[in-house]
Image (cartoon, rainbow, N blue to C red; front, side, top):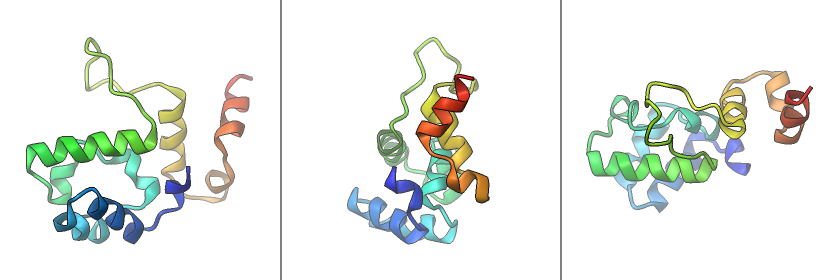
Length: 114
């Protein structure tokens, strides 16, 4: 999960490597770091300045692939939050603070089962 340490410049380079150099500034000007990628989806990409539907689909798909999170099932409302372990962990890691910085996925899983 090295992407969690990415700066907004690293994220911008990643977006460029996907073939979207025109969106680098959208990510750097909005301070989208690796930790904040969990919040990047089709709902809030227009807020970053990305409104081309096909680009939104591709970027959202690549973010989910990078994060290792799955699409919601076809019968699940998109308004319902995902509840898989990896998504919950990444949502926790998107915050900052000493406790969050030291949290590892393994530690999260161990504490969850208690």
